[in-house]
Amino acid sequence: MKKGFVFTVVFSLFFLMLLYAAAAYINTLEARNAALDSADSGREAYFADDVGYDYLSVWGMKTSMTRDSRLHWTIEEKISPSYDVDGAISSYEDFIANDYSKANNINAKAELDRSGELRLEPIGIVYRHSSGNDIEIDGASEGYFIKAMLGKACAGGCSLAGDWVWGSAGDGPYISLDILDANGSRVDIMGKTSGYVKLNGTSSAYANLENGGGVGITVSGGQFRIGFSNTGADVKTTITTEGTGPAKVYAPVKLSIGDRKFERIALIEK
Image (cartoon, rainbow, N blue to C red; front, side, top):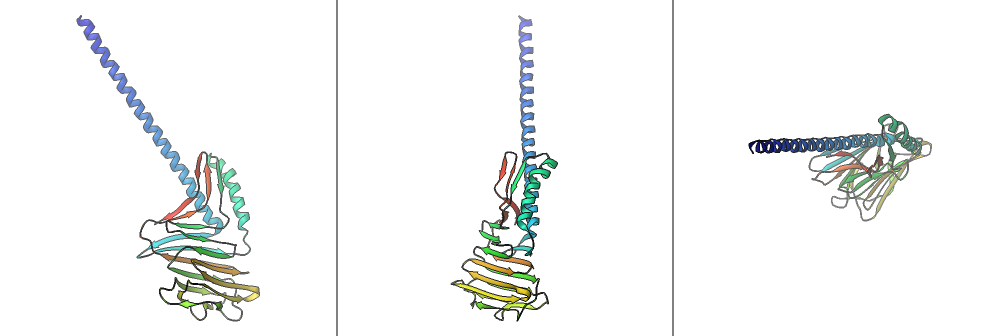
């Protein structure tokens, strides 16, 4: 009787030990799998960051944000009429699907936007190109600060003229121009390099450059556009807007890595 009781107690303790050991093993296995999943997720995010950075490089762009009482979003790039951006994008997409995938032992595919678009969210400002030689900014902004060095000199004066209406504070966004031609002459719009422009219409101004070149600026509604005709330019654009909450800049790059898909890639956050 006593032996049976002892045997039952010993067996029960041994069985409980097995249960505890099995539970500990399951917990360890689950933790390991979670860690692996997290590592894989981090690895895929690393590849996405890689492709996002390369998207900027293909377009020759840099972007940054600063904040004081306003949010200031800056994009720098080189406008070049001879640059075959479409060919560069196609070559890069092929590189991701082949050499990059093989080197990293992944199955990746990237589809890059052909307009060089960057998007500031949740504010909803979009920076893009409708051609290889212009910059378009859509969305409500408080100010546009343009610094540029043109590849050609002005022909017949550096003052842009046309149907342009300067206004007063409250009429529309503030525009500041720091544009120099190839000879270092300052470009202005109807004698002014800064001021407010009215939004209840379209303001447009243009100046000729040597050898058939030209530069033009248009403001219409919530869109700002600067176009370069038959000339290159180094351009730094800063867009100022309200925004106290977190803001992110996204590139519309579609990327798949195995089963995981990115519809866009976050580049910076402020």
